[in-house]
Image (tube, rainbow, N blue to C red; front, top):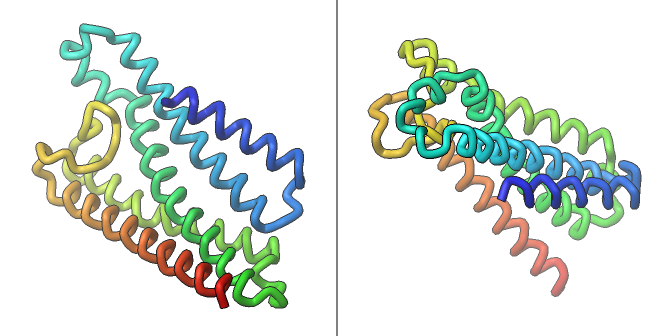
Length: 194
C-alpha cells in the first residue's frame, strides 16, 4: 500500500508538472496534495521496513521501537499529512465551487490566494496537532509513541486525557472538512444544473 501510494503520487505529480508547471491554482493544490500524500506513503513504507526488520521478534522490541526517533518522526508526519490532506481536499472543492459559481472573479484563480490558503492550512494543521503531541510526550513524561504503528490516535487502550482530547479534536476537524466538501459538492451540482 505504501509503495503504490508513493508511486502513484510521484506519477500524478510528474503528470501535473509536465502539463502545466504551476500555471494554475488548481495545479498548485493538486501538487501540494500529491506531496502530502507522498509523505503518508513514505511513512507506510518506513513502517513496512520496521515490520520486516523486526519480523517475528517484534514483541521483544516493541518498547524500544515505540521510543525510537524513527517512530516519533513517522508519528509526527503521518498525522500532520492526514490533517493537511483533509484541508487541501476541502480547499480544492471550495475553489471549484467558487470558480464555477463566479467564473468572472479572478481572485479564486489567483496563485497568491492559493499559496496563502496553503500556508493557512499548514499553520492550522500544525496548530491543531503540535500542542497535543507536546502535551502527551513531555507533560506526561511519555516519550514513546502511544501505538505500535506510530500514530497519535486513540486506540481504546491508552488512558491519557490529552490523547483522548486530541482524538476528539481530530474527529471533529475531519467531520467539518467532510461536511464542507459535501456542501460544496451539492453547491456544484446545483450550479451546473441551473
